[in-house]
Image 1 (cartoon, rainbow, N blue to C red):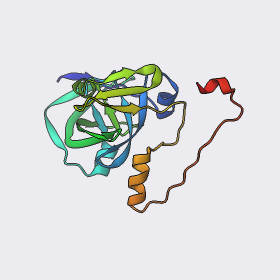
Image 2: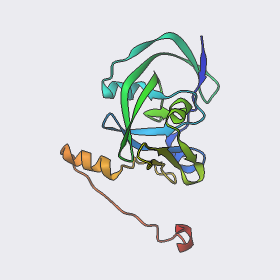
Image 3: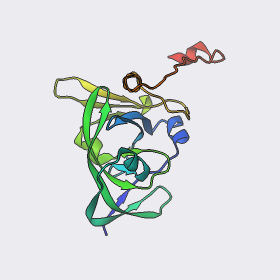
Length: 182
């Protein structure tokens, strides 16, 4: 059985350390918590999120043994394709292996990051994707330990169009030194 790797991390941990990038993005027009996982060989989708999308699951020709962060291996036998993820107004195709993932909906691994020629800036929690029209799509990761999902203006607009009620808050920590806002 071929073997691959997947890095597993909790959401609160992912938003507080500099070398991991995570955020909320639209996957098939559904908000998803995504981890850009350059420690993983492949891209993965949580079983529960795949069920939420009601995607057709396909069998792999041969099962994979996926080594997760605690050193254990998990057998993976299925994948989904025909998925898209929206980043900075651009839509990217996506195929994912399906497995139980506790904290995230989607892991985008090195196969996907390399295919899209991404440039990762860990210190800024930012990933840049070159586009055909000489511009770049930018994925800006969450900063600083926020345990509540954050949504982009695009996701907010789409939610409003579907009839959802939205509440926005802009919060400033007045105890912080002004020099911290560089």
